[in-house]
Length: 144
Image: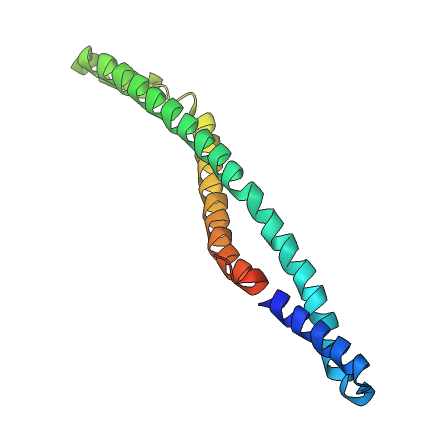
């Protein structure tokens, strides 16, 4: 669309110069300059699109690794917990409550969860960018 407007402005300006219509050339020149500037801005956004898919893939892979490690950690903790509670006698219950270890890697899990959520937010933003790129392509060259 912008490319078409730019070409039309150039054609009108060339035709106006040939026919000596100098007083009518001001609007097409201004529109042509503005569309030229807008064309370069939109091209910058369209070029940025090329990095979206690989970036999404990297973040999704990192999230899969986090999911896998958290699954392993949780299953190990559940197994440890079941072993402890299967050997509990009523006399040792108070001692067990006092000595029961919290999840040692709780901070690690918390950090991994924060990274996971941050990655999901970033992936969501990149997906929104993918949707906007079709609009930008249409403005550039009637593309999809």
